[in-house]
Length: 495
Image 1 (cartoon, one colour):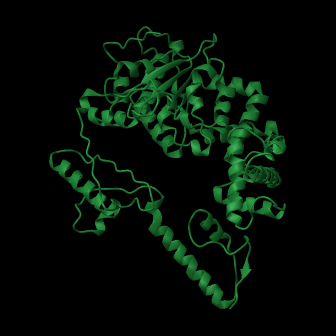
Image 2 (image 1 turned 180 degrees about the horizontal axis):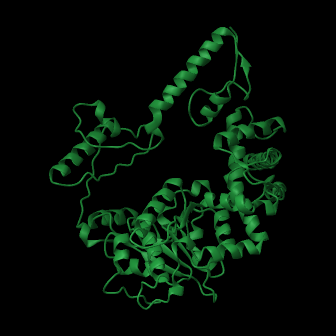
Image 3 (image 1 turned 90 degrees about the vertical axis):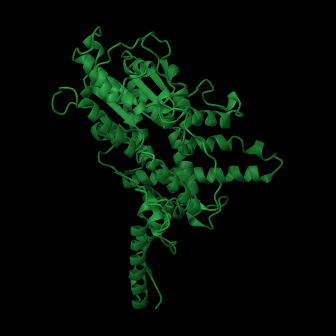
């Protein structure tokens, strides 16, 4: 389908984008009410395009787009926007609200912006009783999952799985429980699959294969008992939210019809990071030609380690076909507005040796925006992170002296990413405005709490009182504080 950008872009779209959209951006913004997938490269302005898409649909519904039938528009209150993390949800909600502020809409007329688990939770809260699920079920945190899973060890004996170190065994059980659940596989299916191959594995050259299969059978049994324990206590985890929401959608067609009537347009952000269960939920609710726009980058599939499936994005056209059955459109967003030409060329050079067969999208090629110029690529070697931080700060100050704005962003991963943030401790280091984000930034307050707990612990030890270790057990599982001395119960310490 050929869509030509008009010579005069509506000012509301211009305001939402912050500039005139490119031809490929306008095509994505003004696409008709039918399924499509946006392959959005890094720095291509996908969030701005999504916000502008909501504005365009609202303008069309209000009769503000020349030559477009108002039936091809959707008011913001009938738009559903889903993204992946809480931070991304807040950012998308803010961007959409700012974009819609230029329109004259009724008070409260705005899209429903949630993350995928939040959307599943709302589905359970509203319709869970129909399927026998109690509303308001408590969702376990990761620490609570570990604590509850520890009780499984009291319900069964492990002959093949090493149980000498309890946290390691609990971690194995929870990992085996989470990954199959993300792919909608039950523990009994794992047991049947492995048991059917035990005789064949006996003839393997190494005993390790057979021993691993026996261990997997025990862990699958532990997973089943862990799920039974959750049912007994009436609690769920995030995987259960998606699983139960799918069951509701598959059992009650009227609920599906209600959602399609309420949300006449759906935008799915970061779709490359959804898992199989989340994609099944979206298909159950909004398949069969419903206007769904999925947005993602196949080269930024960063959550595969916890079940994200890149194939959800790559196979979207076939899984979410148009109403007449043809595959959904695949729209590229390949213009990069973040980096200069040299930077993109350097990135292409680095990934050049990778064969096309090993690339998720070999046809993808980012194009630099001419307004960013050539850019600069520099290579440096440093003795440690502190000299690297000092070098970066000096470079930022030098750029600032030429009139550049305070806009650099430094990302660091590892045990001490606060190198730049700790610059204030070194008077010889240039002064650069900075903000350190992430769990490491909260380390001083966390250490203060651990120190206070230690003082209380020591005081109780001297007085011979029974002290609860439940709090320190949770802290240890998060990588904080000391390792707990035994089970989650009160222990009387010797004087």
